[in-house]
Image (tube, rainbow, N blue to C red; front, side, top):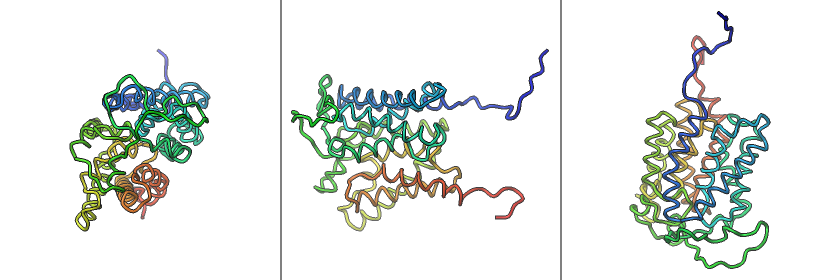
Length: 326
């Protein structure tokens, strides 16, 4: 018999990084399905372009050529696509995917070493580079086989006028026109906005499933939504023109960001106390940006800002080693 000599650890958990990544991707399939139901072929094309950009960048920057199969690049591409409007040019979605992986992950050393959520970093780049394209929204109209807006626009060329009507998102309507979208429309997703703002019910169910499977830490979405709900509730009680708590939670990318973006293992704190601080910061910043900022939405910036603060939170909330004084 052969004697096998190895170093610790000798016990390994059956849950691996690829299993976690793929299971999260599976939970996003219904969300993508609803976006296709509302926005048709454009949702498929934008998602495919974003995923393709992530996979190509992963292949180019991965020296060992093994990271593509772990599902992290695919997950990043899907999350990026869910942050984009249905009429977004495909070449821009592809570029956003390459930036998300190249700058958001590979530049820091690969999976597990990035400081910021890659999908949100890619989205932030697109927000800065193409502000007009990323804020052009379409209403769901049941046209499944046609493309929307400037999906097929040529790279770096000024597009020709298209037969499409840009509309405001529920957040824009409330901020600039003081029009409130019904809670039922927000739950069902029959509103204009990004692909991932299509169905609040599915995102809530997906979050519950991921919590029960212990894939995400329940403290993160709970602390974010609780803080945003309480803060917005106080403001709403003072002045009803401010967004109500249920509107704050259901509108925009709050649910998508709380369940899928903020819960990223690498960019969120390690301790329970740190997670509560992290979630409080995100919820507070979202409401503050939405109410007093120049933009109607603030989820992306709130999460990225708290990603930057996470190393400090980890430092000041680390557990005391047994036998040592504080």
